[in-house]
Amino acid sequence: MNIAFGVDVGGTDIKFGMFQEDGRLLSKWRIPTRIADNGQRIFDDIAEQLQDKIKEASLSAEQILGIGCGIPGPVDNQSFVRTCVNLGITDIYPGEELSKRMRGLPVRIGNDANVAALGEMWKGSARGKRNVLLVTLGTGVGSGIIIDGRIVNGLHGLAGEIGHFTVDPGEQEACTCGGRGHLNQIASVMGVLRYAKRFLQESREYSVLREKEDFNCIDLTNAAKEGDAIALKTLNYCMSCLAKALAITAHVIDPDIFLIGGGMAKAGGLLIDLIEKHYLSNLYLMPQRTEIRLAALGNDAGIYGGAKLILDRKGD
Image 1: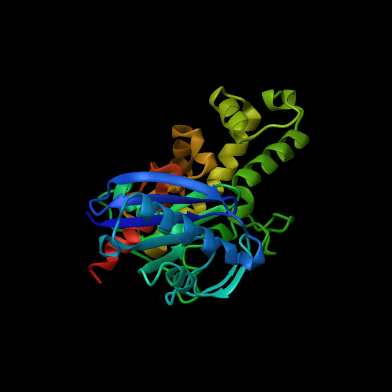
Image 2: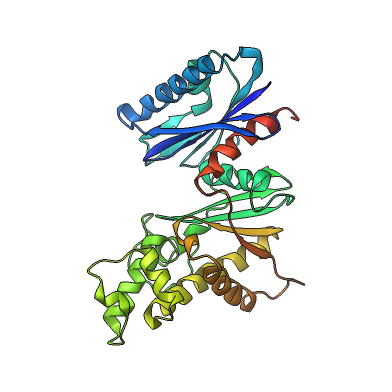
């Protein structure tokens, strides 16, 4: 039995999956991320966890196809990472660091959003598709591009960063990158909540959200589903900005499918309906619209994509 490991490194925790060659998930687990010492402990912790699992499963080196790993930062085509702000990692080849600790086992590294998109293409909502854009609406807006079944990194590892498209030039507050009016500021969980609070301040209209001292995106989406005017106005505006970004992207990469994941995706069909409405109004050259779906694998997309990185290596 041949085994591939998928690893998804986040700022809060590190997720692991052990897969058979046919894609069956045998086990999964997670540990807290330790970012001390400029992230060097991360590689020690990953290696320790994998070595323990290999020993527990009585696996020989010959049975292990390799380790695929997604990390939260730009990864170029040479697997070089200039910086991962959330991890404290700078100027490093993470694959080499991990391979050294794993006695030379093959390691493949990718940006976490790209790797998650690969997982969704393999075993999730984009199964059977070859050209995919995954957008994750979490703390920020992340995205990953798959073209002809392969991750697109770009020269500096920045391909697919639609979160930094300018979609509202009139926005005065700055994005985390220093720009203004970026999708990241508007369609992320934090962005949606910020606009909800802004619309509440600008209006005296009744909203159930006013009854809460503090509210989250689940409160907001539930209110929208019940017809709350402010909640609906917020989601309509924020998703119109996302739809504009998707339409621009469609004219560049012409994907088979758009996938929407992350915390905001919990709004389900309501979110997709709003995105589709505005997406269609921004299309001009497409003979038919690109399909838009919710991502299916949730927090497991990264470990599936990591395993797929290794399985694809066999065909290279």
